Amino acid sequence: MTEMTEYEKFLWEELSMANDSNLRLAYLLEDYIDFLNETGFYEAFQVFQQQKAKNKMKDAN
Image 1 (cartoon, rainbow, N blue to C red):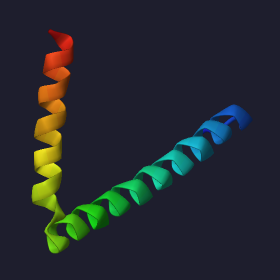
Image 2: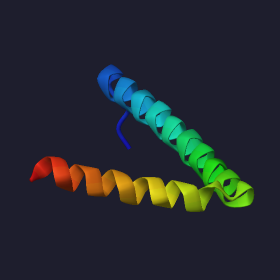
Image 3: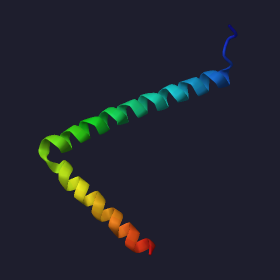
Image 4: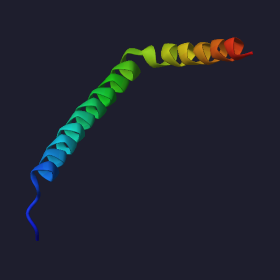
């Protein structure tokens, strides 16, 4: 196996940091969804999304 160049090491570190960040965001999103479900806000959020979609359709026409 060949050794990585400095640039390849840099890219590997950047990719690793991005992956870690994405994992933290995914876990945070999962916790947020659980919070919405537990508090009953999920239904209100769905209504909000539907209204937002309707407004976008109105604005597009």
